Length: 315
Image 1 (cartoon, rainbow, N blue to C red):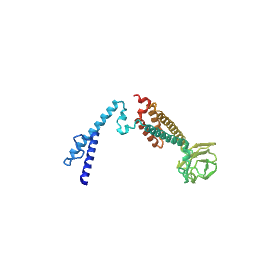
Image 2 (cartoon, helix red, strand yellow; image 1 turned 135 degrees about the vertical axis):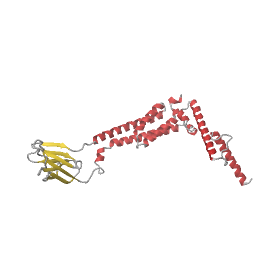
Image 3 (tube, rainbow, N blue to C red; image 1 turned 120 degrees about the horizontal axis):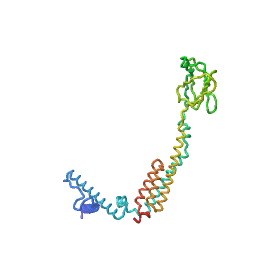
């Protein structure tokens, strides 16, 4: 036998095996040839391909119905046969337990980091702090008198002082000009106390943060005493800390529930209880989504190994 004849014989045997496998899988019918004829048009080939796909889908549906009638879980019945063969392997269940516990531990680590982090440290860091100085401008007016149509003009010679709240030291002192205006240049960005004093008038004290109010307008009132007020914008830092702590606590609780779910899966007693616990563990959000992805993969494997649980094996 020549080499060409031997090669042709082996090729023919291979074609026969391929045809048998395709026929067994329902891809082609027994009377069909696996190779396409060159005389077929494109429309004929498309129709043949559609018929093949319909036969494959119909065969899979029939297999799923027969498996469901035999007591197999409908979700498991839709899986390929090669995957269903490993449903009773302990390795599948052990891998599911490992994924669930690892994903929950990652979530617990994320919650611990949230609790240990203090937003005040972040705000006080050099990233958010501004090292540039700023200017403080303002206008001092006399008290208006609506009856006599007087007042409301700029007051000259008013003593203005800026004091650092942190150490009580003076940041600068000046007086108003003829128009009642004053200005401080290169003032550090920190909590300051602006004090306005003049004989015969009530002393004005304003807590401020340079840059929040571009131009201050204050009115001096005749009399004694101190008129104090806080011009600083309210801080939402405390609310941010509370929200961060609440999220961290929820994350830790969810991570702990996820670990309990993994241990329940290891016991193989209650399937639905185990899936509920693992589902709650998803809220741990370990690594934003990585930990939750591991838990989801573990829950999918639990669905495959559902028959290994005590409350499902008797169904």
